[in-house]
Image 1 (cartoon, rainbow, N blue to C red):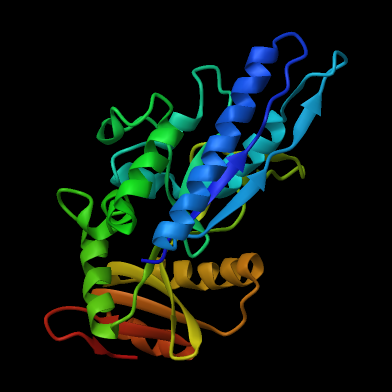
Image 2 (image 1 turned 90 degrees about the vertical axis):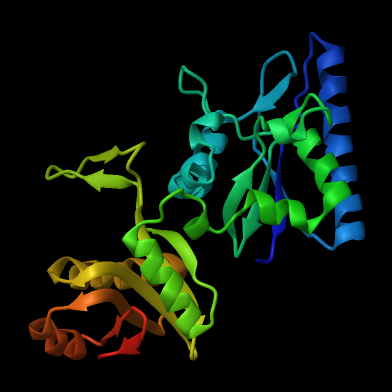
Length: 286
């Protein structure tokens, strides 16, 4: 897996506490210095996301929580299932009162999606009291093997992988291509009959089981134990959502299953859905 780092930068300015301002500046300087050293030593590239700041009448500057919340909903919450399977939680970014804290964190990304983010992790005890600095110091020492350890492939993370995960594992081996799992698509809002909208904070986006670039197309893959109406409906909806959100047109719809209802195969063929029977002898049936 190819990794990058993403630093969410926010430097506070306190009119009443020069010490707080200096601490914020020192932290930012140390983070950027470590990121540069990591890039130079290990070739791991990074980007800096500048968080919006708000200014008060006394001249202080502090993070705009609305911006942090936007990032939380767009980049972090859609990956909550991935984080959970790796043993930590997106709730680490929220306080008991619902405040969101993105600033001063570093995220590990792959193909633009967040795979891991800085939070308290006992593996970095003794490196630094701040979780972000502790992680960066450990990464400077160990390099990419540390990221491989933190971003263990989803299929091997749970003690007992689901049937869908096993299907995707076998399809991945058959295709000899890396599948991007749990890819978010669609909005986190529901539109009511009267036109008003409500935001769902905990069930958020839909997730495509897997996506990959293969044979000149973007493959959208739905994994199901049995080929059924639900699988067909899901892959059709995911195609539309993916096209709108990721601006892709050359899409191949795919259903990977262990058992196929023969009566549904002509329908899949008519709708342009490729069907794979996945098992000891994986094969394409449509």
